Length: 469
Image (cartoon, rainbow, N blue to C red; front, side, top):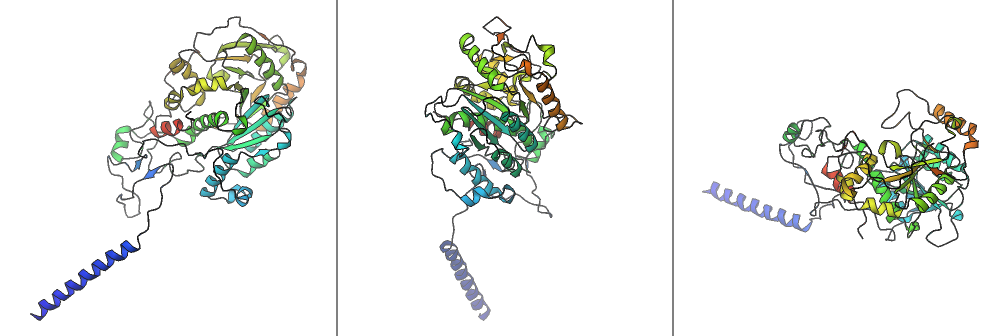
């Protein structure tokens, strides 16, 4: 009997402790931490092995989108509230944490600070700039420095030209190169979804993503995050390859729709990359091409500084030095040194869904596909036969030569330009092709794209860059 009484007392005591514990938990409960604004993760309830590695469960994905099944554009509004931190703005990039880098980029894209503001045109009209030059940069500061030096040598560069540098990597050497520019006003913008900012989660490479060559059936069995989204060739995304297309489309949309200094701007935007080199007469060429386009080819979509013809003796090409072609825009020929205006941008922008879903990680092949698959007519370009822009990035990058020296390539271009000054700065240009209507599409070996862009997450993030009016 005494044992039973003691047992009952123990049970009552434990019951009281249980209720006290619940009350304590309720009184001291704190709200769960807010999830990352880009994605929502489920609570990590996966079983783990002895090394604390997640054991994937077939058919169970731990990645989910928000309720609207989309990734919203998280770039802050241009005129929205911002907390400016002078300390953050002045810190070396290599001292910033990932969260500080994200905040730095948010503030920079909102502030849109102009370097060399004293060089801005005094006019407040929409045509205060004759040209806007946009450079897409990554982390090759030696190339960017060379491009800046070639721009500085261009005749007329200090007159009504705005330079926009679009970065996808925070590197102190890149910042030093840009801040040394003194020949025109400069604005820096920063791609906010780079692999540097998201090193182990989409849009970077999540360790739970499928490996590139994993067969789809095996990927589904393993339960890796993007098992159901390989490209048309059965390969899974590689973040480093997708970044260039993401950055290109974000940059174009930001410049035309979100850069406040260009509100109402109807002029040309010249697209360059960090590993380009311009001839000293490139501004003259753009002016002549644009005049010819306006007078004779008003429906032309792009004007171009030239194709990938190798630099050499202009004297051998003297008959072509002042001649342009009006042709269908072709990715492998016309993706370097091309300029467009707002009319062309709006035309391409209407094909946002196609651009973001076309299975090709190359932005240029995607643009070419827009003509056939969205616009139902070829995009066109008025471009010089002899190049006035050159590609020097042959030694590094995604596609590069095994053995070459940057200095040798640059020296070769500079010698060529110096030896052929008589063929630069033409007074007028003529067009070799008499027809003014282009109907034939450029030839392409893979009309459905080269792959690398099958992941539905890439599609949704890409679509979020567009500004809905």
